[in-house]
Length: 235
Image 1 (tube, rainbow, N blue to C red):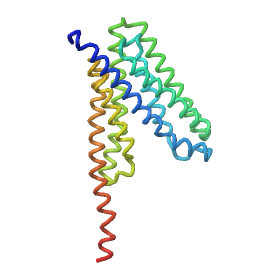
Image 2 (spheres, rainbow, N blue to C red):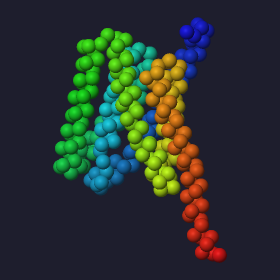
Image 3 (cartoon, rainbow, N blue to C red):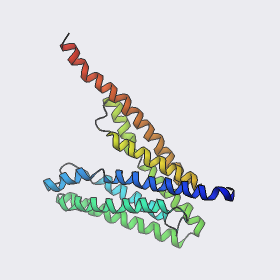
Image 4 (cartoon, rainbow, N blue to C red):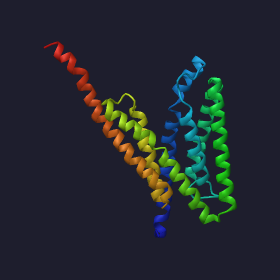
């Protein structure tokens, strides 16, 4: 337990980390905007998939529920960032459904309804069958499982970068924002002594570091490969 003199400093640091995490996460939530500008402009979803937005919506809903005082008092920054995430994903999914083909519309509507139903089931079960402490543990494990499942995307990108020796599919600002978001909530979780926050974000921070290291390594490698043909042709 922290001495009383350390409590104000701990509160200030945790608040700063939480606010920073919210700001960096906002950058991530806004990253698909160019994709949806193209969808609206062309009035078609083309070959784009709506699945990532469905998965992110489910993750945001579960983590939002975990961050609310009814489940986890004192970690409101988790609720705010995921509340923002829910709004963004809902807008993206709505736009996707509007401009999708009939088959995609039905699929996205079905998945969206399934996510809402699943979330409501989680809420009802956690309220009806668990006391306050057990509820936090139950929802906490669900949020960790949900966050870890989201790591499939950065792992795929890491594999793709190594395979292609190119950072074309790994924009720097996205990797950097992901790293800063995970690092901020890792710090927030540590200040709050909440393993359900710092554990998954610790993994996210490690993946972010790997992505950044690969970016700088393969960026240089790609530059060398691009220059080699010019050097050879002039020899």
